[in-house]
Image (cartoon, rainbow, N blue to C red; front, top):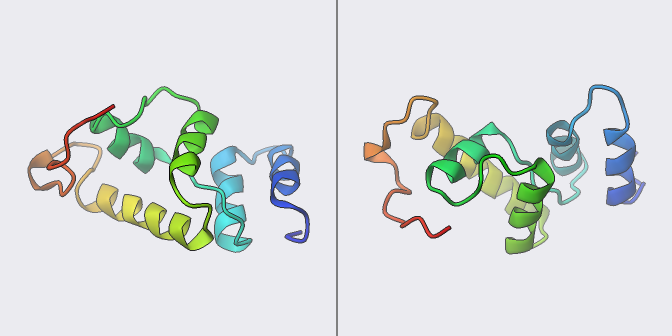
Length: 110
């Protein structure tokens, strides 16, 4: 499966019933080592609370924004996404308590 070029494989997987972009990009990144940045609820939550992205933007738009700002590198995407997940689970829960947030020192620029 992973011998198919990334873009073509992504399109084939997205065409399968029940697979959405987050699942497909997770498969490509984590199982296939193909650099597609995963946009999930944690990413939307953290970045929209800091007004660094529009929470209502489409998955593809957000993914493009991330991928255009980060090096096209599997390990970078893995680590960056892992840090987002960790931050969301420890600091940026559904009910916000921003007092201990390590990101609060950065001004909202978007």
